[in-house]
Amino acid sequence: MLGVLFWLDEGVGLLPCGLLACCLHELGHVGAAAVLDGTVKEISLTAIGAELRIRYRDPLTYGQESLVALAGPAANLLFGALAHAMGWSLMEALSLAVGAFNLLPVLPLDGGQVVYALLAERLDQDWAERIMTAVSGCLVGVLVGVGVVSAIYYANVTLLLTALWLLAGILRRGCE
Image (tube, rainbow, N blue to C red; front, top):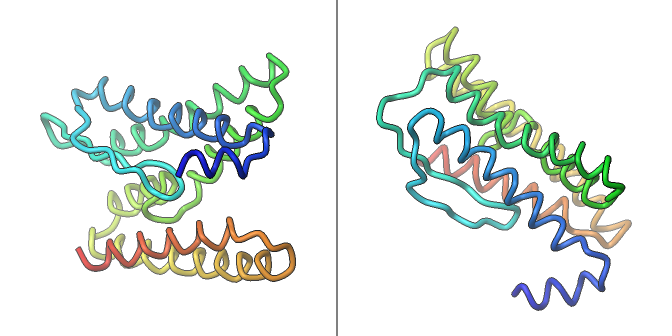
């Protein structure tokens, strides 16, 4: 599969730069979790990155969960700044794009986890879950619509596939 993706990349460097940006993002989460006595229990590779399952010795507060969630986008921001200073414009753009995408307030993304933690701290957990499911569903619906337009007019299915992956994540959470 990676061979096909490298071939489709046509030497531009999107794939290696994108993989590096994703790896650094996940390392940001791992580093923050390690500070809070967390260890990686499982890593699942997905269509657009990775999902970490981290085990903690003690349950985290919502604030600590938010810090771990924000550590990934923060790593992308720091690396984007370094890439900018080094003149690596493609790496800068991809790192910042990965970080910004993960800040969308959609579960299971980092931004969704932070908004959920803020809501759950102030409301009942069930209400926080309902609100986040509704918000996530609406935003993903918009992404699906824009993805369909992009696929039809520009023959680019990337956003549509990403939106469908997010939709699957929302549905999977609803079944748990």
